[in-house]
Length: 325
Image (tube, rainbow, N blue to C red):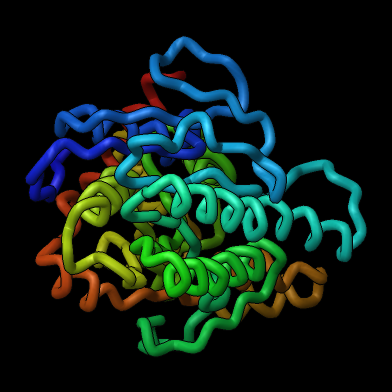
């Protein structure tokens, strides 16, 4: 792992979601640079320095793990729950309880314990789901969350700035787009499965632009934000700094698997029209829509750039995927 850090002193780090996709790699990276790290997990595990907290909400008691901690990195969150039968109101309440109230409860206890900096892994969903062509999200874009997850992350950000004003604890907010890398699940895993099974796909003529972030690029930025003085009390967008089309992404996945992609060049407008007729416009939006992030402020403020290219990230992701097979 390539890390862009300025290690001036040993940092005592506490990471929530320390066994998750992102959190686990942050803990490993902190160990790599010689920092003392402990982490929260939902159940007992074999990793050292773990603290079991099955549920994160407004009542969680963190007092036993925050003493002498310099920096908290809050990765844990409620994400999309499959096969869950809740009303829209119940769904929003559940997201707010964990992602908003749970975050603010942790932050208040961290400030009271003397934690210097609180790094919050938010989401680009705070800004919205899509961007217009050649109009990437930047820090001047007004928040416009569209689903309970995005709303809960935005409300947490608002609350964190209030805590910073009242306590003086430094806040850093990072908004990533889709994160991929070894062990990725959900839609990215589904795409790899389709390519691996050599299923022809009608996505050979998609010319959208989407920002992604390779897991090690995200972790590199998180570790830097734990100790860089310019990171204090700022929000950062992050990506691979290389926006890709669905067509290019699928081609790169196929290349990583050492095979030719089976993409049929169906016009994008035809796909969007067919999806609308079938009542599946939301799927077409994901496949054909734009979601671009302008990370120039992040790179300039922190003198940072993503250490891995999109191609390198895909290759590492595919290598791990094939090994798991």
